[in-house]
Structure formats: structure tokens, C-alpha cells
Image 1 (cartoon, protein in one colour):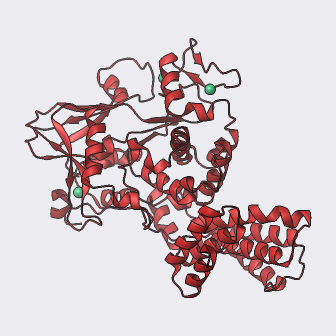
Image 2 (cartoon, rainbow, N blue to C red):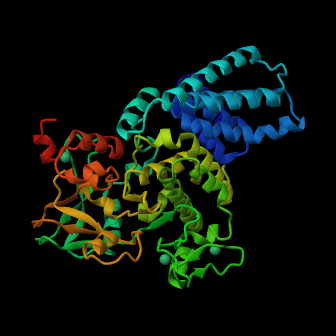
Image 3 (cartoon, rainbow, N blue to C red):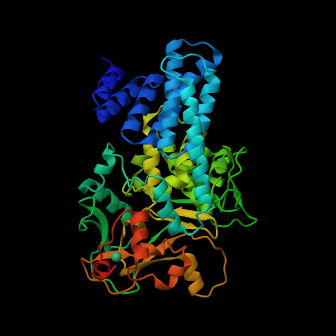
Length: 499
Ligand SMILES: [Zn+2]
Ligand SMILES: [Zn+2]
Ligand SMILES: [Zn+2]
């Protein structure tokens, strides 16, 4: 029996996880066999990962569609084509993407030209298409009448689509290995590069947490109020397309800009140093490439909601440049993946479109299993709830993988400050608005051995009504922590609060 046959056997027996493994092994050996992709898509539907089924069905279709269009096909090809298209539509419906499902079915019946195909009742398909169209229209009306308050929105959307509070996919071995002694040692090394000797990374545990251990930062000696523990420059900075900011550090570019020396590349940097760092990290693989197709996808929605996709672009570029799987990038390996409450609603279909466009642009084969969609989505989930700071005002964003090691407390002993707010405090005139580095500072005396906490609500400070009331636990804060960061806060303030 080959892998596909083994997969089929497991599938028939209802052993879907085994089927997934067999099909995956088959894909490793024969990545251009559309049957494997199509069958794995069906398996992902059964395993309730419709987002992965959409991508697999898309791959199956891309392998078989040219044959159908050119007329060089047999009955088996046509059956597989219809099956794969139907599976894609089914996966889209399972992701509440009724509109896209309609488009998919329409395209399918056009290409197949309603030829008789075993197992396909074209009239029945048409009825399904009508049903999806109606549902799509209802969804649009529902969204239109909902208003714009973010919290009501999340509440309402929850009724409409599923929010799998999934972080890592169960087969993600790297996530299981995340909080081990080896993981700890490598994170400690990263921390030491930017911190003093008064703090260290440690494995800590929280009551009722979903995992036994998490990373945390602990004081190795008594620390005085006002001490700065570390100063982190972002690993990745991104800005909205078209802004005149350094592509590496986000600093506004004066007239004396440094352009990428390659003649077909229009990227600009502060100076040679920023260019060299970008070149070393990610720029080599995107140098001279036209990113407009990606920016169009990002701009399709609200500016700041698509920015995390641009961070994913740079992370994939780093991986391509190092010729490794993005999950093996040392600097972000330790980040905790969590499906942000608004992620699927805001990014579902767009994120999948972005994935395919990204792969094309970076010239990575969609059949290279080191860059599979589940890996891409895991990366996305790793940056969403971590130190991923966006300023809607400047349209810029940054990823701080070390600062995310600090855990949350509603009454913290440390806080973040960035260079912009420090300049404002010193009453300096604004030289630039974009943040170039972020520090963490003790806001009270801390004893040796104590864990150091910050307040994550500081990151969600885009809601200005919160500004006056950041410390202390509120129902609002607890909800945000759960839907954005994936945990129920059990800090001393929350435990004694009446909410
Ligand atoms: Zn720069
Ligand atoms: Zn360049
Ligand atoms: Zn709390």
C-alpha cells in the first residue's frame, strides 16, 4: 500500500489524524499528485481545520485545472476536479465565507461546463449555490447594522462565526518543545544580549493554565524602582506602504536617504548600517521585487489590521534567506501562539490569499512542506498576541520578541516606555513619531526571586477611555486579556475583585 492508499484506508475507518499523516507523507514523496492534496483537504474538513482545507483544495485545483482547461483529461481527472472544487466550497462555507463559496462553485461549473460527471448533480449544486448566496447577503446586512464598538462587534461576530481558541496545531512538535530546559537556555541567551545581569528567564506556572509551564522573567537580585532592565530594538519593523520610512527601523527618511544599491530596487533606508542589517536579515530575498500585490491585499481592509500580515512577510523572508522553516527562526521560536479573537474575522480569506501571493513572490514552492499553510498560520498566531506594537496614528508596527517574555499582572511591578513617550516626558520637540526602541522599567522596588510583570492592557491602549483606568482589574480588561492573549487572569487583583 502506498501512502495515499493508507490514508484512504484510515479515512474510511474514521481515523482522520492518521489519514492526515499518511497523506502528508505521500505529499513529501509526490508533491504534484493532486489526489493527495484533495484527499488531505477532505481530511482537514473532518478534523475541523477548514482554513487548511481551503489551501489544500486550492493546491489540488492548481494541479488539475490546466488539464481540464486544455481539454487533455480523462474521466478520473474531471471527477477529481469537481471533487476538489466542491471541497474548497465546503471548507469556505465552514469558515463562514459564503460569498467566496458561491464564486468557487460558479467558476467550477463554468470550467466543467456542466458536463456529466459521476457523482455530481449540477442542479443540486445550483441549489446549494443559491442557499449560500442568501446566507452571504444576510451576513452583509448583519454586519452593516452592527455599529463600530469593538467589544460589541466581537460579541456579535462570535454568534456568527466560530472562534476556535486554538493556538498551536496538535501536531506541532516545536510548540510542545517550547518550554523545555533547552528552550529556556536559548531564550536566556537572547535575553542576555539586551539586558543587564539583574534579570533572567525562568519557567513559571499559573493556576489553571492550559500549559504546565510558561516563560517568565525573574529578578536575580534586589532591584530599585526606576531601574531599566532592558532596551529592545524591534526584530521587525513595518509601515504602511508608501510611507517615507526606513524599511529596517521605521525612522522617517530625510533628504539624505540611503537607497538600496541594486538598480531595480526602490527600498530606502536611514543609512548604510540599516541597509546592511536589512540585507543580512531579510532584504536579499525581496530586493527588487514588486510588493504591490501584497499591499493590495493588506490595504483591502483597515490599515492597522493588515499590518501583522506584513510582519509575516518579513518573517517568511528571514526563513527563506536562512533556508529554514519559519518556525525554526531562533529569535521567535519561544513565542506563544494564540488565535486572536478578531483574527479569523479580519483575516480569514485575506490571510489565505496573502499566503499564496507571498509564496509566489518569495519564489517558494507551495509544495515545500517547510512553508505549509499551518506553519504560516502558526507564525501569524505567534505575532498577534505577542509584543506586536502598532501605532494606528503613524501606521507603523514592530515586533519585540524579548519583551513578550514578561507576563501580565493587573497591578504590575514594571512598565514599558518607548523612546517617543520619553521624549514627550522630557518636553522635547517632536523629531519623529515612530517608536525605534522600547524599554522595560521597574515601577516599584523588586525583591530578588520575584517575577517581573507588566500590564498587557498598555498595549491595547488604543481605546482611549482606558487611559485613566489602566491599573486594577475591570471586566473589560479581563475580557480583552482572554480574547486577545488567551488567558484568564488569576493575578492577586483579579482574584480579590468582585467581577
Ligand atoms: Zn533605519
Ligand atoms: Zn533592494
Ligand atoms: Zn489580573
